[in-house]
Length: 215
Image 1 (cartoon, rainbow, N blue to C red):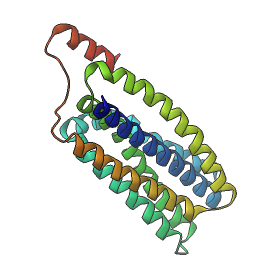
Image 2: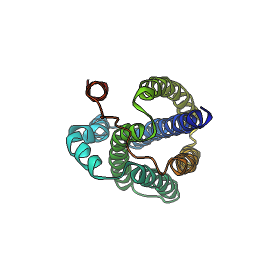
Image 3: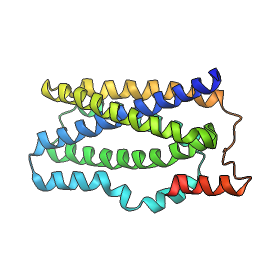
């Protein structure tokens, strides 16, 4: 029981940190673009960019089926951490507004891609870490964790924006991603011998598993 609880604690900690980092970074990126351009057309483009990966989500689902979700989780954490470092570096240079905004838009697109992939691979990771009868509780608790992260990230983002702490915000998000990476290592190393727990050995389990994840 302790082992199972520890696995759930690690997993929920990872999802909380990931949601916090994603929400804070997304808010700060949009704010920086708005602060530099004050252009409604460009802001519309930013919004479109953030949702563009969802328009081609079928492709991402296909790609997610071809990759190892645990390795991809590591890669996504590292890329997100490097994005934060890159954003810190951009603040040290006096780029032209157009160049700076272009960099932010590219980063926004990459970041949106990572968020979309994360949603897919962490659904697969649930199937690896938890048995069928445990998954519903894990996902339900995950919804609560996500709501908590939304509140906390909004408070943090508003504080950072009010006091113009752009560099601090990127450093903070980078630290969150780094801690998330460490937690991921602990979680996946403890469960490195597990394979996907689809539990499709009987007809009832098969039907329940299919309906649970796809409606």
